[in-house]
Length: 476
Image 1 (cartoon, helix red, strand yellow):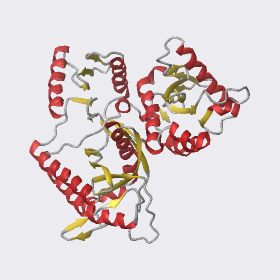
Image 2: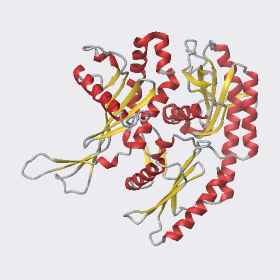
Image 3: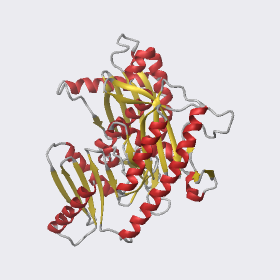
């Protein structure tokens, strides 16, 4: 992405380029070991129009780097390689299967007088290893959610099937990668939970139990409101990646009809005394269409003895969404979908209304929100709970933050320091802009605070962070 800096006069402006994806490939060093067959090691390569010898050369270089670093530490191969222009990230998700992502460093192009070529300055230190290393792992996790492991494809159809699956998935997925939007939240990969009173939570639990009892095919259920999780029957790691898919991909694609809100005329059907605003986000778009297709995306989730394949049904009413997962061995029919629509639609509509009403009441009781003197990011490693007052909006394509990128870079650097040690730790930084930046790691929790108190001293900043820690611990 190109950004024009206003620092220079018209006609002599600097051009700023944000990080961008240069290459992304998957290879297996045990394939194509004979001379002249090196291309067989490459299972996927982006961009695809790169000349064959260049692909082989780039993959061979990565293979050599990994092997060389293993001589120093056999159990911990290379994770990244820093050069002036690029940063390479290496990840081995399964034995002998390597994913490599090459990112061009941000740069500033400065014009020169007398018609000379512009001077390019690469900002090597602006790329944070932990952030982009986490992005590579997310790529694999998302692939595995919809396709299972690389090994599964090898067992099912050999190298040819694996190559087909990789091409089909990553061709589309890599287009959704917006590297300039990546930050600390990508490292955590957490889940935002919706705060609820006990009575409303029990209503949701009762709803889930009734639906699972009435539709016995359902194996797992997840319930979300306003893109925040309330209930999940999945294991944490499976829910973490499913949550990312829902909130950064599926929900944004279907957000426009929701903007009409509760009074939308999209489907004001009456079922008894209840309005019915329910609709399928996956599967049939219109149940009354005789040509409707009853195919749902399939996902893979962990079990005690491996994994299982499931149909993913995502059903939404107003701002509430219910995800139902059913064994992929079951064929889903029109009758089943109509039964689910008739049962879930009215109840989910009513629940969405109740949650909205309760949330409004709680906000009214708590009084008008004042602009706090601090902003924070909080993450709990035990339940993956994530909170941020820094991010006004965070999706795969858009990242709107309320603080300067330099402060986000400091947060990332503090997180890197935390990753190097297992002990609890606290770091306090006074930024050049007079902001205070504090990172605190304690009892499987991490808290990052940005304070706008220019005249505060170290003791006052420490007291403010202690107070905020108490609030966060009590609410999570």
